[in-house]
Every structure is written in C-alpha cells, then in structure tokens.
Length: 337
DNA sequence: AAACTGCGCAACCGCCTTTTC
DNA sequence: GGAAAAGGCGGTTGCGCAGTT
Image (cartoon, rainbow, N blue to C red):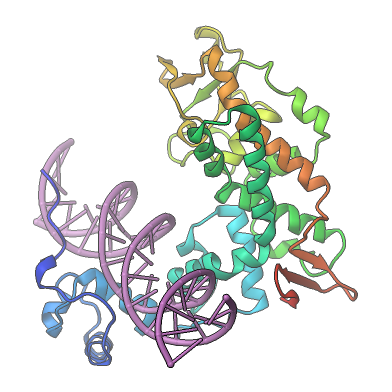
C-alpha cells in the first residue's frame, strides 16, 4: 500500500507565491505560530497551498532575518570548508551561517561557488577520464557512466581540499585552520594518500585481495558501527589504496580475503559480486575477473594525482602578491574573492 | 529586433527520518 | 511494536531574465 499524499494535489496551487499569499502566511505565523502542524496550516489561513509548500516558503523566504545573495568572503570560506568536510549536507552548512537557508546555499554552491573553485579543473578531469575510458574500452558507455559518477562530490571535495591545502602553505587566507571543521580521519587519510609518491600509491594495488564490508564507520574513531552512515566513495578508495583498515577478526572465518576494508560498497563498486553472510557482516567480494573492471576507477584517481602534481595548466585559484587569493574565471580572468 | 542560450533561483518532488497514535 | 502522518532534506525542474548571435 502506497503512502497517502500530504495534500490533495488536484486542489493545491503550485508555482510562484503571490504577495497576497505571502502576507497571509507571514501574518498568521507571526500572530499564532505554526501550531505544530504545517499540513493543517494552509486550511486555517485559507491558502490553497500544500503544507510543505508553506513550510518551504516560510523557511526560505518569509521568516525574519533571512539574507539573500551577497555572500561574503567569510561565508564562501565556511561553505567551502564544510562542503569539503561533510559534502552536500546543506542544512548543516546552513546552520553555521545565520540568516542563510539550505536552499540558498545549495543554489549558490551549484551555480556559482563550485564553478569559481573548480571551474576548468572539472573539464580537464573529464577529458582525462575520457582518455582513460577510450584506452580501455572504446564502446563502454557503462564505464563512462561510472567514471563520471566518480567525478562528482567526492572528487570535487578532494580537489577543493588540495587547493586549500596548497594555498595553506603560501597564504594567510586559508591558514587559520581553526576555522575549518575537523576532518574525518578517513578523509585525512584520503588527502594523505594523494600526497604519497605515485609509485607508492600504485603499488598498494592490486595485490591485495579485498573484502568489502557494508558495516558503517564511526566518523570519529574510524571504527565499524551500525549507527553511522557509510563512508564516502573517495574515502573508500583511498583506504583501499593507502592503508587498509582491519576492523574485525571475523575475516579469518571467511574464504579468500586477507584484509577487511571498510567501504560503502554501493558507492564504490557496481556490478555483480559474490556475497556471503559472515559473523554478522555482509561481505561483498569482487570476483577475480572483476578486478579489471575496478581498475578504471583507480586510474581516475591516479590520473588526478598526476594532474594534482602539475596543477599549473589552468588554476582556478591562485595566490597573489600580498597574500590574497584570487579566483580565476575561465573566460574573464582574475577576480577577487 | 528576433531568436537563441545560459544562468540564477524559487519551488517542487520524492525519499528518508522522526513523531504520533 | 507497528503503521500512518508529518517533518526534513537534497536533488531536480522550470521559469524568467540577461547576454549573445
């Protein structure tokens, strides 16, 4: 049985809010409050709107002390740092920026800040990934999809952190790390990995047989736990490349794998895998002939490492005299942050 | 001047979590 | 304890506007 809709879709108005509707909603909430029930609210006011729509309108636009546009340099930094650390948790990021809404920050990130920071790097990486895919298997659109999937949030976050870290050694602009949120230990691990020599990095793989555990990871201790969400893709890949983490001795009871990796399996691997239930954990093990399918993913990161080491072809961020930082617009040149 | 294109943003959708009964 | 309702969130869509051809 499906879930009942929150309102009668046929009888609710959609689209932009009129000034009249805004006034009705604002006046009512200021007088009587929400009353603990958004769904019932529009009926009380006489608005033909879905309760969720009212909530959104209030939270994102009508409530007091909302700021729109004009993000400051400080806000840019906070958004950037938090995005690197926690990803697209817009509500959490918004909580650190008084007057800003998650929707606003999300829009700002997607339409402006991301382009400012990653700009041409992304295109460059896309080219690299295409190159890799072409070399391996020219007719594999599935692989292309997987590669492009890898180029999303995780890679953006990694690129951003590397940018910031490079700048950190030159500039006071981002040097106050006290302002930054603390990094997940595996996240730090990821960053460290990309500072390894290429040789070391590559030699980590593929000699390990890998057992992938769907158990979750405590972001503070790095230990397996059932109460935290799975680690992100880039963390997972880095763990695999860098420093395998043994989280349980139960591996001894399972055939084949010598080490247990803590990975969010559906985020990093796709395709069919043997799986088995062992000691309360579900293990996913790539079959031998599937290793080659995983390799392109790691090629992506290897390629990124190579690019990172020669980050000079079209920097989107640069240090300027006096310790300031400029974002470089791909078309119009430098612009102060 | 008209058509086209790209961008920014408000709003919607659907899924997941939390609360209530 | 379980089902339903409501809240919350992130991704996506579509409209309006400005700039370009």
